[in-house]
Length: 589
Image (cartoon, rainbow, N blue to C red):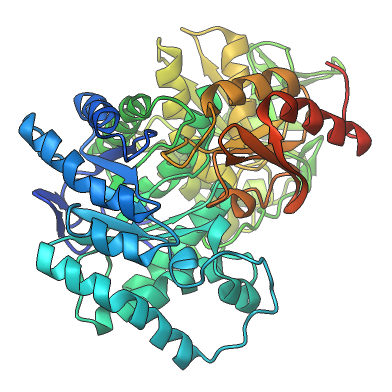
């Protein structure tokens, strides 16, 4: 696939014109505005609680509300929830979330505007995580998919219900795992099989989602999917989200980095920011992200350059010289206006390293007169043939890329592609200066602007500042962003789901307790999951997992291996810490 095949314009903001579908009375796709949504955490059999929470989501600005329908009773109760909301004057479309139970999906399609089905669970059933399970011909497999889908499609047509094909990294079928492994290619294949089956049944009211808790996997997989749909000729509306993003600033930064990386290239028709918090708290974050990315339409496109060096479908770190601890195979550096945890401190026109050594930050006009290691600040307009030739002859220069554009990401990426085209191997540090006065706004916008550059391995560091905010907070954001993009880990990472009606323990307070006791374990990834539906698979990246197994019951995992089954919640956290100690990975705070 060519680098430009997944979007319509790599050098400016341009929405991909997808197929327009109706979800109830709400139009989605085409060039409709990007819609925002959330999911209730109530028991769907509890009509009153579900209606009250749905109204809170709607009042916060949510345009779609999803509810879990794990069984027939929950699916049947969608009728009562829908009727109650309508009686109160709310016509917001409802989505029924189904995993293992086709019968529940068929009931829910009568009373919901949209039904979400997960291919990995809908046809394949419960996971054995058995990679030798590919013992069925493709023809037989496709017949099985169509057999499962036919009654559902018939009901959807009769009731004008839309289907969402929701592929999750953590719940691929054993057959897909056997054929492709735990890969983006497998996720795309799973999605495309269902698209083919639905189209063969003459059904096209479809929305697609393809999610992962790892932002790098999520972004590269969605791009592969978009390229595949564009090649096929029909591009369905796309639901974006980083699943199990977590809570607090970490969840917001991770979501903005992953979703923003795709939206900047014009992808996405509806988004959900999945936070381990009250569902209505997701909506203001999603709305702010949509508004910010949409504002980039005001920025002019830049002149296209050769993009053949760009790898948007898989991670490939840009080849660059090693200058000091910048570039080469080094982790991305952080440059701050203070010497806290950062690798360099910006002091006037010099960068001071932790050992006290100092290196000049030069303008282009000063570069010719300087010998030795230096940092040189430049913008896209500075990259004349003469400058590119000059940079290509130096192996002791770090480029500090700057942009004043409203679409900074595109300019930063174009600078790097232009350096590649000219054979310049200088490492690139991104200079990002903000004037936000609200810290949360700074975090969201910086993450949306910068995530792509580190998800794709293009940048070697980040020089970040905001004169209106505390330097320590700005510096911490830089490290959190690098961790969110899988580029550099500076503390424990918590992969936690937002919870839903399947969750049978207090997920939000539990996550906070676990973070309080384990946040100092640098480099460890801890999965905290409400239930087993996506639990083991979404913890594929995690070293340890804490997973709901029943009412106030918790099972503990080492990777995908179950090590403690159905513990009482009051002992589960201590038991998890004991396992980490036994593995020799515990350190005292």
